[in-house]
Length: 279
Image (cartoon, rainbow, N blue to C red; front, side, top):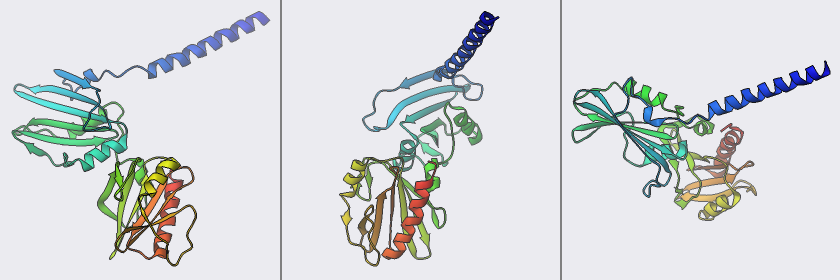
């Protein structure tokens, strides 16, 4: 009987191991990008390029599709895949190539674009053809790895007094100083009072923060007691700023046309949100 129990245990262990292995293998099945359809149309041509792009250093891969939707009508789709969400959003917002939901007329073709997660989707078709934006959005949602919306890190910035349309991402320079870490930036306004809050996309090494902070114009604040872990700087004529690398490695920065006491209160409120945020 003892032998039977041992045998049964071995069989169960082997079965569980096989099940786990099977699940792992199932999760690791590679995506066949060449088979991605638009509605029920399979691509008539497909190209994938993962070579390094000298003009867009954060671009990891480019996919090009052509769909024959009807006789004499083709839909071209280009998908740009970046290192992460922040680089895709940076290129989408700052390159000047995209107009969001507004179609762009380029010669005889209309171009529509979307950004989702670390991808940018560019749809190109004859200007006299009509493509429902809902159909294009559905294509985007079905693309492997899709998750929509703004990067979650933006949610950690304060909501009150946000200026609509005044969000930005800086990946090379921040406050006019060369930076090695991406930064999310949001502008705020309360009447005539204006200020900005920014945070690093991710954790930042101490040396990287110090290298960036060394390029700021450091000043002594007036009316407050300077904290050892904060940098106080001039952000422009009449504009003060406070920056700090928080515990855990995130960087928080606030600057604007405020007195030092008001700026300090604003900084503490923002830095608490950034520190406690999940992303």
